[in-house]
Length: 221
Image (cartoon, rainbow, N blue to C red; front, side):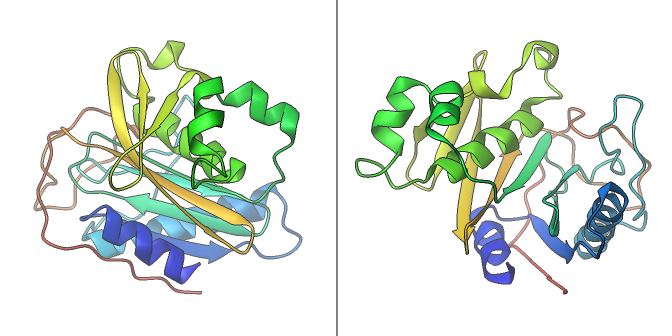
């Protein structure tokens, strides 16, 4: 997982990604705690003094102002991403088998024809995680209430994928390892990250783009 997150951080400069294992008995409580631990580590790496991520009224994680982020987990692993100054961030991790029926449900015919092997370079689980990550990154937009992840359209780009819905688009990068796929979507155009600790804000709130030099991924087991 370390190599996968480093690849994502390199593809999306200015992003900070962390992961944590989910401890036994691998239930919802353990998954939630592991996700918050990963988020705290990502916030620390990004320079935020505030490292707690409460749950907003709508159920989404509420990251500090200027440090938008996202959390995802399976029953064994939790990942978190923070991209200071971004307008929206989405991360997703998937390890479930994708059935042919599911493929027809969440992928358009063109996506199946051009993105899946042999014509394309992506597996079904990679495309599933890409749409989920894009959904999170786009959820804070004006049309968020009408957004359904399977209605997001994916096309190839020079560096990965581009996800589009309602005239908005967001780049998405996916990497797979040992049957799992991790995807990161970053919507630019927010406000610059503050020099101070910031204050909690709902994940996905509009912010101005902040340019940062390089990328960083500090992963701890």
